[in-house]
Amino acid sequence: MSSPREHSLTTSHKLEYGYKRSLGPVLSRFFTGIRDRKILGARRADGTVIVPPKEYDPDTSAALDELTPVGPGGVVKSWAWVSEPRRQQPLDRAFAYALIQLDGADTSFLHVVDAKEESAMNTGMRVVAAWSDQATGAITDLSFVPESKNSREDAN
Amino acid sequence: MSEEANEPIEVLRLPVELEYQYTAGESASRFLRAIKRGKLLGQRCPVDGRVYFPTRGCCPQHGVPMADDGSVELPDVGTLVTYSIVRIPSENIPLDLPYVTIQVLLDGADTVMMHVLGECALEDVHMGMRLKAKWKPEEEWESSVGNILYFVPQDEPDAPYDSYKEHI
Ligand SMILES: [Zn+2]
Image (tube, rainbow over all chains, first blue to last red; front, side):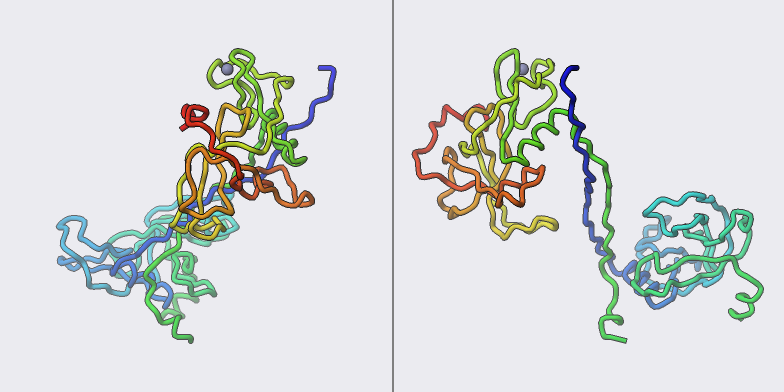
């Protein structure tokens, strides 16, 4: 090519869908609970408790409307370590996604354990809810931390 | 605690965001550099001579490259091919409702561009109207089609239907 070519222009481009979700009666109570620092599960006819709550029983399809507090402590049933979080993930440092069975619940709840080190994680460990300073009523108001001896005593 | 803090939470905002780094490529970059200088650049297909607007790297119909020397400067006047009156608000669109989105066939082009119509009563909008671009002040020009604020009706007879019917 004899004539020098100009470079291609480049720019950042953001595609955004500003979805809003209507929560309905059951999840509205769940997220209102989150804002008020409570974790609520739905009690089924057989007495077991589902967390997070569902509008309908997944087995019998019966409407569920009895919500009951669970946690704030629980047991890690399974987990995956996120060593390099992406920008939109809940923490800006390494953390674990974990299935957590909260005390009083019969199902596991997928959430975040801010464990600092992968070596601090193990299946069967106890974790406890840690609330952010902002009470916005979003699931990100909540995270979990490994339960220390001290936090256990505080809870008791 | 404010009263609002005690209201139940009934709606959750869950925006989905995709962030891209967009590279225009040689051909579209030529178009964008030209519009920064207030020029509208199209490109002629070497096979059938049709003029595509904006410029693109190759002809979508014949699959052949469109060379730099096929660039055609187009005037900022054209014909309203079709339109839609928008009465429903949308986030991220700052226009006052109602507004009119239009497809404009610039004189000399064989493809339409999408834009908005201004300075026209809704009941006067119709196909075939002759239009001219209303530009931002020159000192605000960027590499963007947004340099044209909107198109305004011209005081001249409508274009004949046959001149734009294949673009509807
Ligand atoms: Zn062609």
